[in-house]
Image 1 (cartoon, one colour):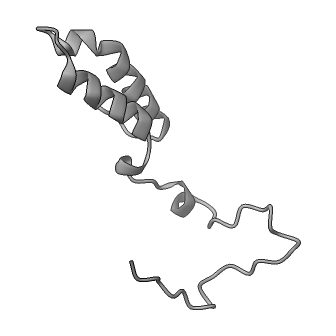
Image 2: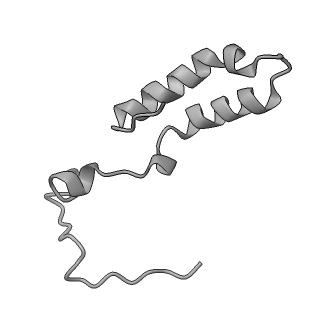
Length: 81
């Protein structure tokens, strides 16, 4: 995988005084995340339950796992049906 070169003007100035500081940009730029990048464990558990359920009604059997996934996504601002 090729490495990406970031111009020094775009990189934050890291010093020994700010190593523990949050260097993300303030506001919405730092808060935006993609739905594919959050709640990965919950999503995997949901998918595994739904795909490999031996029940006639996988939706009902996996209801608590699906609810956990929806709650996790809602915590990041995503509303699922």
